[in-house]
Length: 418
Image (cartoon, rainbow, N blue to C red):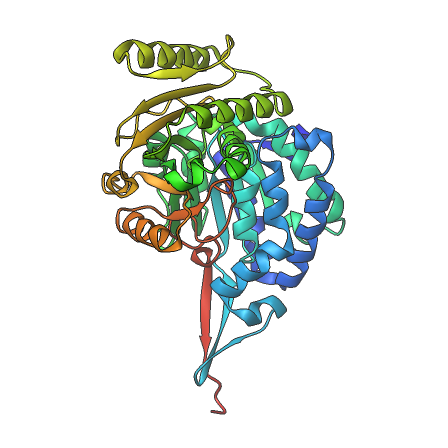
């Protein structure tokens, strides 16, 4: 697999790759419809146990489907883009064209992100220059191999250059930045801040998806409904399990609205069963010593700091449910550690948001009440408000911005005959 991803050794090597990509983008006709067909075949090829065990592949398959991408492209680039045509705009017409070469700096803790980020730029007709984090080389190669297999003529894969090099190689980081026309940057605060300081050309378009966190919330009517409780608990467990809670869309805390006629003990018991079932279905492949220590410390601190708090967890660090009360978001532990906090009013929780919350997963029985909560969340910086169980479903906008349109030029043509 590693031969699909080049080990970058010099700035010249990266510069030459970018030049090749730019020539292809400039000289070859681009058919969005052809790309969509290839993506559909790629999604179908990512089937089987070997791929199901890779975190996030199920969502990558969903993202690559035409049923997912068609409405996104229609909204971002116009309906005519689906047939490689021009969109009417009064007396003029509009069509998207690539900006050139897009560089990708994916986060190292999300297995599918190098290819997920790359796909956004390819849908705009661009070339993609991707730095693959060292820990993701084997997985990325395995997934990319399937793309090459379904794209036998190379019409799409030759628009892609995958490189791997140590993050400390400042010369190579700068070489990538100097040779791109756009950049998609993902990751934590330190990484994002560093990448934004690289010497990009003054015309380069930069899309940044920086560090955020996500929360879930349920009103009393929903969690206290015994007929649907099991289904909701399964949804929460699935959201927690994906990406080891390291994704920005991972719920770190679940706020439960207090019910006047019931306590949450039975709900917590069913949530525990859902966590146990998810652990059996998707056992952890490995856990770093640092994460193990963080989980053990979080358990001990939670119980020692307040005698009214409770917790459910196995002897191993496989999963943890910390139960308490309060409207403040606890410091995330990750590693399948969910804080469940009782509150009197979900609106009071949302009013404390400070712009760091990316996704709000909701389970609310009353539509008018949910509309009120969604409006408050939007005003306080939340970019995605979704049903619990769908917190990781990749779609556009993401972090409040389009995913494809920022990396295209919308060309305006006013016919000379008009």
